[in-house]
Image 1 (tube, rainbow, N blue to C red):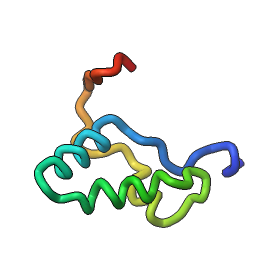
Image 2: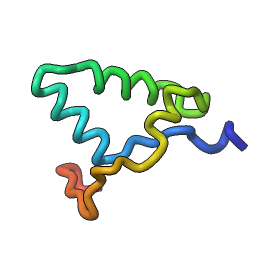
Image 3: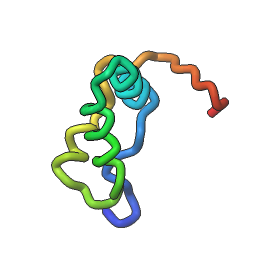
Length: 67
């Protein structure tokens, strides 16, 4: 079933946090997250690191693209 279920899906709160960190000058968390997202069906330890919902996940999250 792993070939049909991604190990990791990008979560709005996580993406937003990493983008803000990158904008502040630290690209490392963003680049690590992008690396984990490159092969979503591999189920690697790196992906496991991001699999759980973030602790700082807001109950509401507004995107600018309307999704």
